[in-house]
Image (tube, rainbow, N blue to C red; front, side, top):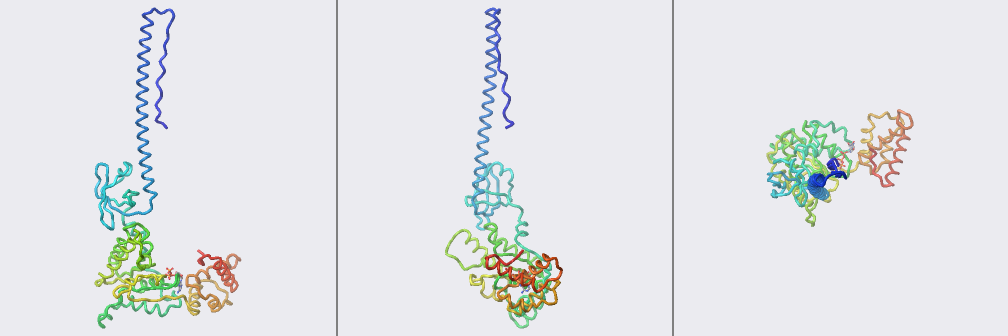
Length: 405
Ligand code: ATP
């Protein structure tokens, strides 16, 4: 380290045999003074080194503490309320508990009242977080005008009709409901296997009604930071109110609305809090104006029935895997821009793809195109589809997911 100071010169003693006794004595005295000075200098240096050592020890122990804090996994969010002489007063989000916690001098210098921080179970500060707008931006997908149209969705005529009645009409013709004297559905729940077009339908209604589309995944709501889920739900509804007309789409709602489990871990409590916040936002939503809520799940069986009560997600729409006609339509949609050879019989492909979702059919078409490219052709043939199908079933039997990209 650059800290080691140079050692003082060693004093030398030159005693000439011709010296008188007195001269010798004087030389020895001088030598003694020199030696004492060097001794003092060395003692000073030793003391400096010791204090530097103890500083370094403290630094090591601070870093060890920080390291330990970083190793613990559960995170809560808190706001710095006040900085005292060497401690920090924090208010934990979610339960508003206030705690005084120690911080290393290094972190202390970075903190200011009002900062948001991530803390662990023992209230040790782990990191200083960015401003909250970031959390919003990270967790939500906002689109002023999604580009999906009803015609882009294959095989779900009935479901599209139901979504239009439940979401589009209340937004575009609210007077229809007033005249008849009924409340439009509060929330629409789309349920069915993955990749069957649930998100597409929500986007298409937003497009049709010129509504802002705000998407949030249930898993995002609970996997970020503890204490954050409920706040994000509040933010979600606030944002929708700012941008109305708006469609809130909550994907994977099962992540926050599963049947209550017996365990009482902090994770479960967090999920509960997030769901309660969602329910209270929906319950207090009579005056909601031009905002619609659509949720989607692949796990309908797991849902807590509380969210299905009237006034909440009270319109259930099942979105099944496409039947043969649906599959053919989806194949037409996803091959529209492809250079297909005239011999291709999409009906035959539809017949061979029982159990495929819309997303899988889209991947199949792309894969067929890849075979043509690999072969140096610009036209996609029947054989490319056969190869693609074979590849897909091989991958499926090998347990790989079907999505290619
Ligand atoms: P998840 O439950 O996994 O969120 P999802 O049901 O919301 O899935 P989407 O995101 O709507 O599925 O579909 C994924 C992609 O698959 C779409 O972007 C689209 O290209 C294709 N797709 C799915 N279903 C259809 C369909 N019925 N018609 C046309 N394309 C479809």
